[in-house]
Amino acid sequence: NFMLTQPHSVSESPGKTVTISCTRSSGSIGSNYVQWYQQRPGSAPTTVISEDNQRASGVPDRFSGSIDSSSNSASLTISGLKTEDEADYYCQSYNSRSPVVFGGGTKLTVL
Amino acid sequence: QVTVRESGPALVKPTQTLTLTCTFSGFSLTTSGMCVSWIRQPPGKALEWLALIDWDDEKYYSTSLKNRLTISKDTSKNQVVLTMTNMDSDDTATYYCARTRNRHLDYWGQGTLVTVSS
Image 1 (cartoon, rainbow over the protein chains, first blue to last red):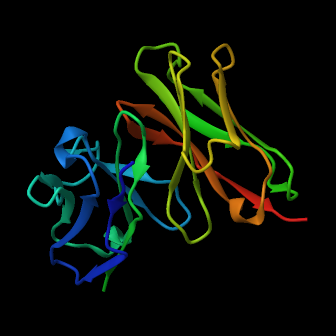
Image 2 (cartoon, rainbow over the protein chains, first blue to last red):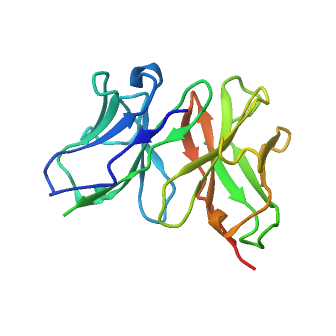
């Protein structure tokens, strides 16, 4: 089956923009939707982006999602970083054999 | 309003079988397209998908754990049950269930921590 690879960690300063990548190992990134989840310490994950680029209800427009067929990857971009954005972020996709595949997660530090 | 809640033992002994129950409200598992997933997260580690059951009673399992997992549903009680056999210390984790639609896990429970220890 396929894997989703994310950077282990990223860090950026408040007010800046950060992008977290999620690379699919096999199969086209565009063939199945990608979701992004935010998980704060001690809490369950919540959706920030679904269906590649749809912000979940209540998620500020500082968060955006995209896919890039040339690199076979999806990206989560957060602009105007705030300290409250500090969390772990997971991408997730699927195919006909595996209904749920998670990336390894990225720890975002806003310093 | 959709709610999802996990329940089960906080402590199991090695080699025992773990039984977890996901109780939900605000949706029905008889509705076309509706599914429930189980996911776990060892302390300080990443999310790991375990199993999914859909409205048509189709079941899917993690390749690495499929020999140890069984998922089932009771639509009259709005519950999904996951059993995992032969528990080991590596299975210590927070276990989550989540409503899943179109392969999007859109509502998660708060999770339940299961510790495997003698």
